[in-house]
Image 1 (cartoon, helix red, strand yellow):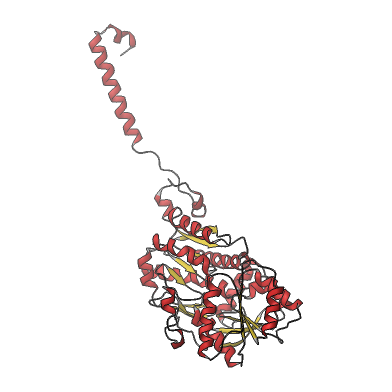
Image 2 (cartoon, rainbow, N blue to C red; image 1 turned 60 degrees about the vertical axis):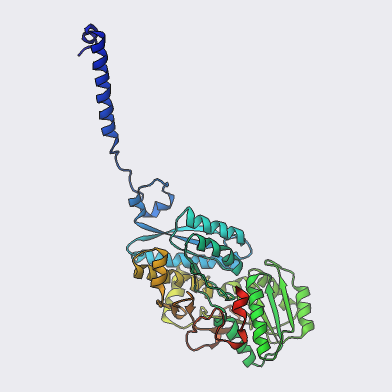
Length: 434
């Protein structure tokens, strides 16, 4: 009807027709708006930049995982390489079809060698990014800071570094050594070599202090006591006074639990003081091939280290691993124990998820019990109850080229005993940890 014709109608009829038209138009608009055209799905490789409102279908093609290490600060000398190894494992897994047919999407955060930052970033990864697992940490202080965050949010952390034991968390898998897989056998080895005068030197935080508490109990059981015990802050670089104290105590071995770039300063100044490995051997439990690169092989050659893996470990899996790591990051790069533990930790998580058929935490933990993996350092097995892994213990001597010659090993993987329940002299340590 034209506007002229509409104007000739009675007023009430005009209102009725206009109202009907308005209702009809509203119904038509509602019908058109109920099915908007679908938004294009982002490719899996770009999923990390997708907005929160992206369609669920796009997200279902990937599984988010977090990596949380110190990429800056005093601990970056050690942790950056572990981050690299975890990325290598994820790249290999994605290239072989992913996990349950889904690609792994990585969210990376920097703990910045600061323990509150580790807790903050862990919370972000779990609550905001909603990752299925986090691979990360180095120092026990960082792990202790993250632990309540993972437990409160029912998250999952794969922790790749040797530590002082006396801990189990239902939300952490410990792929590095616990005390009976590194420190205790290292002391046993030194005692067997006739060492009786131990000087204990460490960074001032959880791992060295607890480790030395255990060492003192182990020495007491052998009728011995340490001739000295000293702690310096993380990042400390002036060791002339400490070296003078060591000289005065006249030990026959230094047990070193320094962490981070403090080791660079200590070993350089030890050499400058004219103290050689022949004069006074030092055994370290936080110095591996990566740290030796920073220290300088000429400053630490001849000194001892205790780990579960060396780049020189002779297995077919290690030949493949070292080749892949160098191909990705450069022929001048080295592998070491925490690097290897970070690498195989990703594969252990993959195996547990695929066995469980889901990334749901409770199901993954149950499926993980007893899982084995042929790691570069040898077969590892996840313990049924404490979520640590069985590992072979190795002691080595640093070579002039920065690599490590294995001089002793345990012969077989050692079952993890984080509370040292199997050692009579360790009675009371479990209660101490509560």
